[in-house]
Image 1 (cartoon, rainbow, N blue to C red):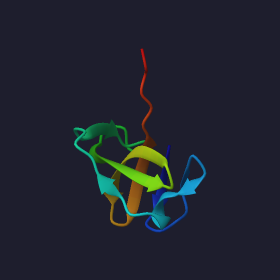
Image 2: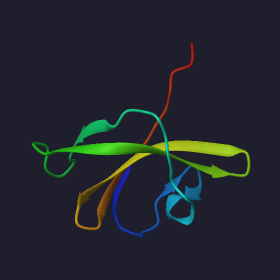
Image 3: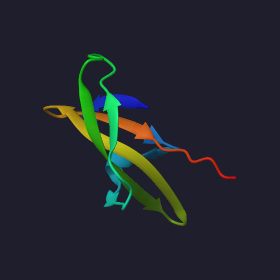
Image 4: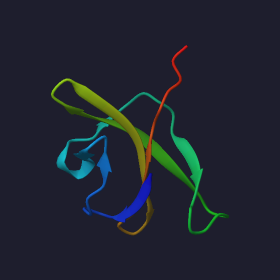
Length: 78
């Protein structure tokens, strides 16, 4: 999804996630590889934000001091 400095705008489904309260979910953390340093792994927490009736889940974690990584979650529905 993206890597930004803390507070830098990043949009998921048209919403700047820094403008919302992040709610922790019961989903397990995700482990991802750092896009710039592939040998490094990061554990990301799964959060959700709610705007009106719209709920968006994403994973976020601090890759280094004030540098955040974000991944949008998508689920297969059978």
